[in-house]
Image (cartoon, rainbow, N blue to C red; front, side):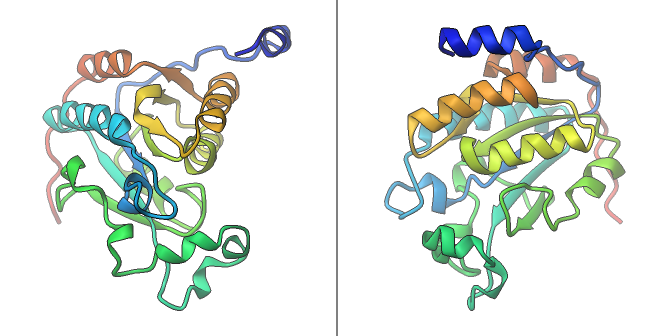
Length: 217
C-alpha cells in the first residue's frame, strides 16, 4: 500500500478486522485448469497458490469442516455467458465438457465436496451458495482461489453483504498479473474481508471445534 492510500484509508477508518465465528467453511473459487494452466488463454501458473490452498483444505477436511468449490462453466452454445462474453471473449473456452472447467486435480476434490457452477464473477450470482452455507450453519468463510481482481473480489463483496465474516489467506489467491492482484488485496482488506497469511488461517481452522461428518440423505 502506498503512503497516500494508507493515509486516506486510515483517515476513513478502513481496514478494521471483522470478528470471526466458530463454524467456518472453506470456499475455493475457480481453481480450474482454465485459470491454473498457463497454456490456457485465460490461465497463469498458480502453483504457488494451489499448494497452500491444499494445506487449507487438508486442515479443513481433517476437522470435518464444510468445503465448497466453484467452477465457471457455460453451455456449448455460450448463450448463458451473456454480456460478459463481449468483454472477455476468452471465456469461450469455459464450456461444459472441456478440461478447462475441471477443478485442478492437485486440490483433490472429493465427490462429497459441494461443487457450485457459476456464470458470473461472484460465487453468489445466480447460485444457491448462500443457502448451502446457511443450511450448514456456517458463520465464517475462508476464501481461496482465482482471480483476485475478479471472482475473488466479487465473492468477498457478496460474502460481506450476506453477513459472512471472511478470511482471505493472501498466499491462496492469485491473478494473471501482479499489479491488479496487489491492488485488490489492499482493497479487499480495507473494505470487505480480513486478508491474512496462510499460517494465520491454518491456526484459526485448527482452533475451531471439529465437526462430525454430516449424514448423507
